[in-house]
Length: 286
Image (cartoon, rainbow, N blue to C red; front, side, top):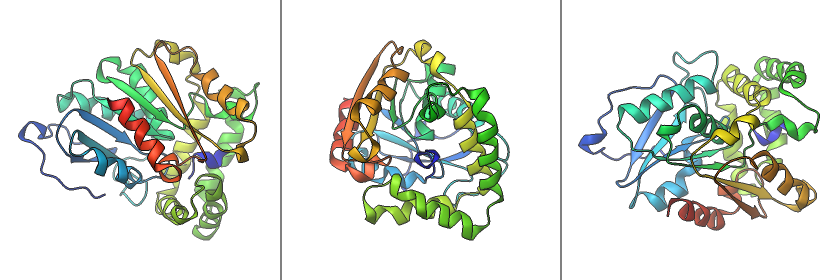
């Protein structure tokens, strides 16, 4: 199950109003295009390149802020050791405010979607609308209906410690074995594995632990921004009613929520079904 989380240098001169007065220590941002602001957050161990097709499609009409989390996919860790998601969310809020972004749209995949949900809950004035791509308010509920953040913690801690302690050969083998459950399109699998393998192991493991042990389900009702949940379905995942129920159930209390199911896809929807995914993004931003 945890495999569903594990896995551009896009250059453009920013407009004068885009001069940054705050330099994040937890992530870098590539800015591209002009227009309404959209912040893209990649998932666990992923590069900002995961959004390359969306960036190419939207740069003519939107100003894109492509986040790359420190320690993921070869980005230097810098001074980012320790907790991952909380500090990233705090710095996203500071980035939005320092750059005078007016309620930007947020699009996050996997752990990036979870970070976007946390941002929308903790900083409601900073988020205009939120697209969450294949991510849940409580990931570990997939293990069973009686799982809680407390009783899954020992398992999550053991997994974190095992990932952090694995040597390069073992970790690469693990990621290679698991990528077939994440990416249906064989031609894109090596890319996803390479991102994970290039990630700082301790940061990867800690972020995985945080997603497994944080339950945001009770907070969903307090998210005021409109939410679009895009989720994957393929018969290999099991009965479609189970998958529909999982996503719709966890987000049911959101005041403003729309669901988009993309069939014939695994976790990396933007790779497995690029046209339907791009259509969902366009509808979300319209």
